[in-house]
Amino acid sequence: MTDIKILYSDESIAVIHKPAGMLSIPGRGTEKSDSAATRLQAAYPGCIEQPSVHRLDMDTSGIMIFALTTEAHRSLSIQFQNAEVKKEYTAILEGNPADGIGESGRIELRFRLDPENRPHQIYDPVQGKTGVTIWKKLGIEADGRSRISFTPITGRTHQLRLHASHPLGLDCPIAGDRLYGSSSDADHKNGERMMLHACKIEFTHPGNGALMKFESPAPF
Picture (tube, rainbow, N blue to C red):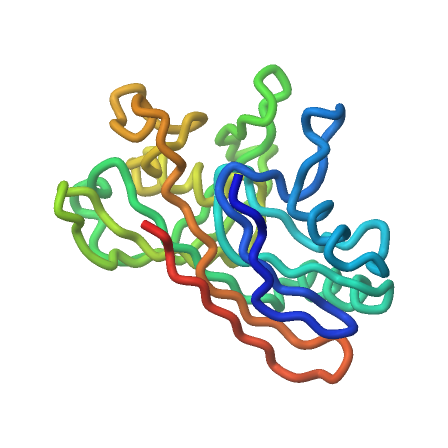
């Protein structure tokens, strides 16, 4: 598996590129012990025990921030909690968004965990928590599929994946999504990666207060 790539580091933080197929943090059991967090700790032996302040799904690639100190972890966690961190993703959908939806827009859907089918999320307008996403069509690929920019305002589990696939969202799953995609999707059938990449992030440095911006172009 491709290793993490360090985009930036100092005494407080490290910004990395996580490849698709790698866990953000270790799971239970030895088979899930490898992760971006554990590889970061190997590269920075003085790093705190729990450096993660956010996650990317295993099949999502892109930019992640890690805290190397307790103070940095506290500051970054507050920024994420208060929705002060700006993120942008690039995705390729299985096809095109539903007719009449336009070239850009805002999606607001309430959803929650399906306890009988973890980690799948389901639409629930009553008990679900609201997820908000701004989206924009970037173009059409040679094979006719849409390239989309997603800017999540909230950070719910599987938010972009559900907002893309649900009929009240774009009604067009992200290509290669084995959880929310259609069985006829070519990337899904061929075992290809999910076409979702965290391409931009913007936050305040926890030590000096500087505005930090990082970009990582989508590898697809």
